[in-house]
Amino acid sequence: MRAGSVSRPVATKTRLRRSDSTSGIGSGGAARRDMRLSWTLTILPICLSALATATGAEGKRKLQIGVKKRVDHCPIKSRKGDVLHMHYTGKLEDGTEFDSSLPQNQPFVFSLGTGQVIKGWDQGLLGMCEGEKRKLVIPSELGYGERGAPPKIPGGATLVFEVELLKIERPFKKFAARGGGGCRRPYQGPDCLKTNKKPLKPQV
Image (tube, rainbow, N blue to C red; front, side):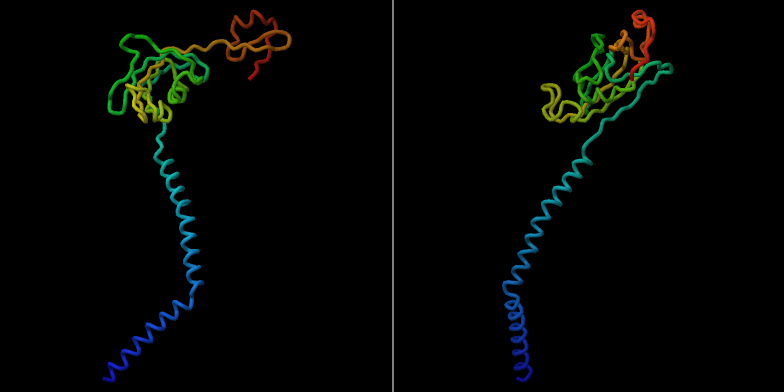
């Protein structure tokens, strides 16, 4: 009986003590809980946003350039503004061919770095020699984007191009100068010198 009578009051006091403790913090405890909850709800979206950004940056693919054929003699390399004559074959990642200049043997001619072609070409064909062959793996961001080029190229498609540079055309660039015309280096050829009895210092 004594053990039972003692155990019940102890349990009762314990319950009461806990109840008093809870009621003691009252609105102050609730306020602290609300502050912690508010802080969590504020920080969580920021953390998730940062994580999504980092994941997106890591998941974003880059342009891949592989040289399939090098040339021993390369007096001139392609650069922005050059007119290039290219043979190419374009495929999707699964190997489906969507375009090629080879069947009709008609090289594609365009000006490099001027926006006439997709960004993957403008970037991937720089510094190329005549006769050189490359393989370009172009992510959609540098290709046709999320819209694609229906019906052959779906949105978000990675493109694989095998290209060969046949010819580089680099036209003369003239500039106006006091006392006569001139030519930018390295194009101080006969056509320029005919109009300049006294060669001018090249402008860079």
